[in-house]
Length: 259
Image 1 (cartoon, rainbow, N blue to C red):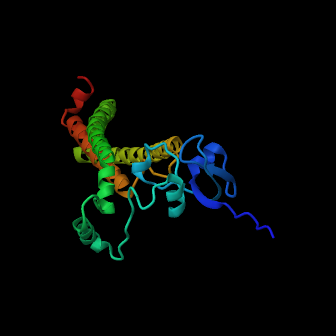
Image 2 (cartoon, helix red, strand yellow; image 1 turned 120 degrees about the vertical axis):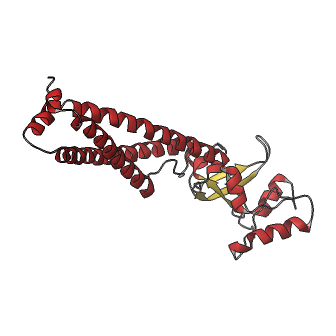
Image 3 (cartoon, rainbow, N blue to C red; image 1 turned 135 degrees about the horizontal axis):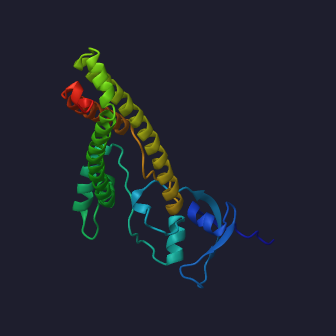
């Protein structure tokens, strides 16, 4: 009695490979150690999503997951691995396990996952520091720009302030009104800035996630960033308004009229 042919072994491919070649779960492909060489017929058992790993962004490679014995047979390299992962029950024991493995024998090197993450994220740390420097420069430049705008805006109201002064309105009342107006402008500007920042962040994430085909988030707006932006905006607005108001009320009313 003839035996039914054995079902092909299954593999797991990543979503980038599936999208580029139109592969689906249940499809049959041939795996070979080299192009044109004899290979094994296998079935696609699953399609794995890519992880949000910064170290994988610049890699335009495809990934295929096989059973260990199948991989050894296909590559003809039994009892040999490039790297493997060891899980510990308590994360606090990771350093002790690393030291124990490194002291066991020569010819290999063990690293904790946190050390690997730090090494592979150095480029992103440099970019983060660069963006922080740009942010500081932008804040300083915006403060100067805001001060100039407030000075120009209040200078256009020289005659109004002079009229109020001649009507008996005190300097403190004029300064308070200008500070309230500056605070409202700063608050409205900060809200508009947060909205623009959130929209720009969403555009950046959508663009680069499509370019690199990764779920990694490249830009995000946190509550700390929003709070810092609002506080700085209001503080700078009040400061600029106070400086402009004090400069204006220190001039005699008749001089404000140009006399």
